[in-house]
Every structure is written in structure tokens, then in C-alpha cells.
Length: 246
Image (cartoon, rainbow, N blue to C red; front, side):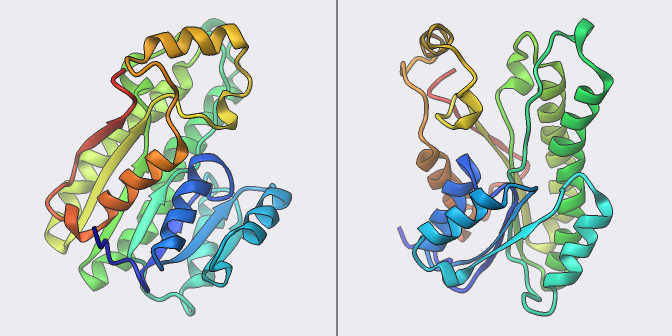
């Protein structure tokens, strides 16, 4: 299937590791110009830049998506070189797990700020750009935890549920301008976010998955490519699970 991303400009937040890295790589392979963001890990960013083909089409910017002023400055920085933003992938996300009674207010707020407020910040300025050209694709990387709600993940589950609610409202606001807004909801994907699990925990979580395996980052990236393409022009306000049947 020809998804026709050659020359398209794609912003991917949290682009240098895990799912974000796979998504950014997939768009580069399809000929897109990728503007990747990361918070502070320059070593990972440099390693990613040096490892990809078509690295001349990859542009990386460090800032905190939870910080409105930094996000605004980022969009002002890129507007001359990249006046048209075609696709935004809101992938930046963190976890700070703890049972609610023991969770610090800082851990609650930092997860909400990055995962939910970060989506607001990044989407606001992208929508302003997309409305001018009457075209755009916004994809939020969400999680089935918004509905499953694992113990110890109240902050994470709340942030992801908020993303889905935001997506529903945003999709209605911009549909007449040719902009679609959707969620992709990966389940257990084999990334560094799972490295803190013990071997016993990994086995137990795999038992929860009907397919009896964790997903691959490439499988999330492939779904992202489709949803960002013109082939998915009539899909908006939706959440698509990539979770092996959980």
C-alpha cells in the first residue's frame, strides 16, 4: 500500500527511544521529513540520529512538552524552515507508579503534566498550523490502562483516559477543516518502559495477553502510518487498540 508520505512534515514527540523511535523511523523510511522531540537525553538522541537512514530528513529538538513556553518557542523556531505541519504524533509519556495512598503529589502532577498537558501544548500550536492549510493528522499514543486501570497506576491511567476524552472533543472541533484526531492504544509493547518488570511479572503479564506475547514497536509504527495516511481520511475521534487482544 502506497501511503504517500514523501515530503510530508511529521512531528513526533518522544522520538528518540521506544515506540517514538520506531514511529519516527517508519516515517523516515516512507520519505517524510521528521521533526523529533526529546526532553533531555542527548546521548540517546545522538545515537538515534547516527543510526537511521535518511538522517538528513531527521531534525531533533530538546524541550519539555509539559512546559507551555518551551513548546511555543519550539513552534516559533521551526516555522520558517517547516511552515507546514502535516502530522503530529503525541507520543511523549512517562510512568511513576505507586498506590494512590502512597503516591506523592509530585509524581501525580508530573505524569499528568507530561502525558496529558503535553498533548494539549503540542496539539494547540499544530492545530493552528493545520487549520490554515485545511489538512492535518493528529495521533495520540494512549494506553488500554485508561480503561483497565492497573493497581499502582492511577496517575498514568488518568492521564491516558484524559487523552482519549481530549481526542473526542478535538476531533469534533477540527473535522470541518480536514483534520483528523485519533488515539492509538498500545498494550504491552517490548520497550524500556517494561525493563523494570521482574521475569515473573513479565510472565504474568504475558498470560494476560491472548496472543501470549508482548507487541513490537514496529507493529505500533505500522498502525500509526496507516492512521496518518489519506487512506484513513474518514477515521476520526476513534481509539484503536494494539494490544494482542487484552
